[in-house]
Image 1 (cartoon, helix red, strand yellow):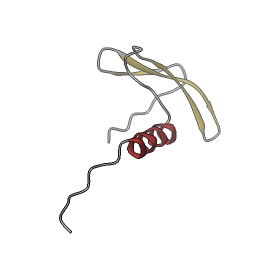
Image 2 (cartoon, rainbow, N blue to C red; image 1 turned 180 degrees about the vertical axis):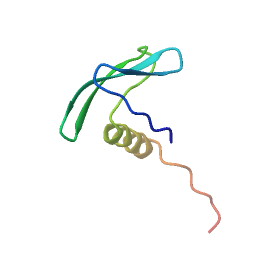
Image 3 (cartoon, rainbow, N blue to C red; image 1 turned 90 degrees about the vertical axis):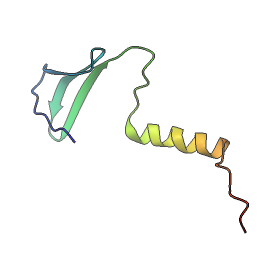
Amino acid sequence: MLVLSRQKDESIMIGDDVEITIVDVRGDKVRLGINAPRSISVHRKEIYLAIQKEKDSEHPAPTSGNS
């Protein structure tokens, strides 16, 4: 994991298309602004995991017939 320090109004670039900016810092909360192409999904991790869980329940993995 890469760990970077940034201050308010400073940014991090991911590739050529994704920019993450520190918008605000209050106590233990950091507000991020994310500029990314619409073709890239951006979610909080707990939302991403819920989406993945829903996808998995819609399309369960095939089970092996070795019983």
